[in-house]
Image 1 (cartoon, helix red, strand yellow):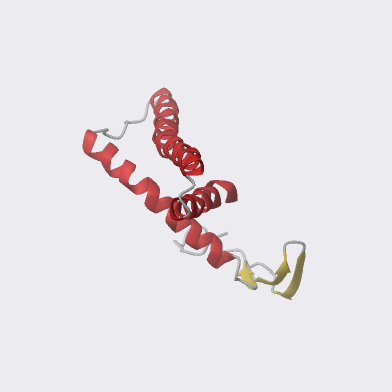
Image 2 (cartoon, rainbow, N blue to C red; image 1 turned 120 degrees about the horizontal axis):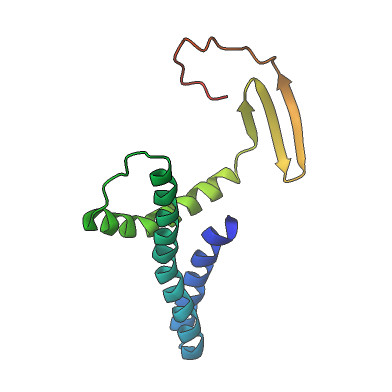
Length: 134
């Protein structure tokens, strides 16, 4: 969601400004909130991972191996995932034309989307492997 991407960025900028202006009370608030966010993401990840493993195990499927090195790698990727999500969010806000399944749309705003071109959808033969998304 937008909140999960923009809120840490906003908090980081506010924390930077508070440090620069020597507003130590705000630094402690924002620093605590940032620390809680950083600690809660891995905890939430572990909870989700546990529930996914329960479902996989109930299906009788083979569970992927789980090691300390994988956990450490995933913990290091969480901040990068948030940064990449922010970049993708900002770049997607600049897109004005979208072409999907033979239909071209012009996006002028959140509630101002116009159909520009329509070409009927062509059924693909399922026996042929394709990289085309439905």
